[in-house]
Image 1 (tube, helix red, strand yellow):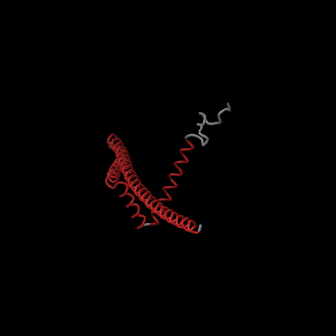
Image 2 (cartoon, one colour):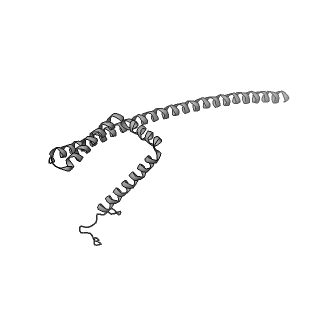
Image 3 (cartoon, rainbow, N blue to C red):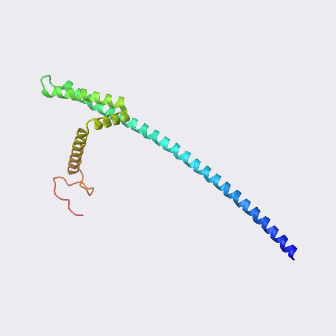
Length: 172
């Protein structure tokens, strides 16, 4: 019996060794596969981020050109008004000046694009921070007033238009 016990122990030891080797091999394979999946995910994330940046830049350029076109159209409209205004009109010169500045602004927007305008604003903010902050506060105040005016003239906060002639609408 001792010989068979010894043999059983040797076989168990050999089987345990083989199982340990197989487990180590599986663990190594799992690590390699996990590393591969991680690398693929990282590469996919980089590619997606690069594509997204490209799309955002394209959309920003498109919006910039549309904005420049709209400013140019307004400037053309103002130039038409100035051309059709009476020669002795004091507003004619002001409207012509506004049209000229509008054309220059449209050209600037087209030439510089979004990145150029951002760089210019950042440069101005660095050179004259007080003027930049004052302008930003003034712009914020003006936009707030315009929004408030738009709400007063348009729909009420609950989404219903006020009845003609003011007053309240009858309950239904």
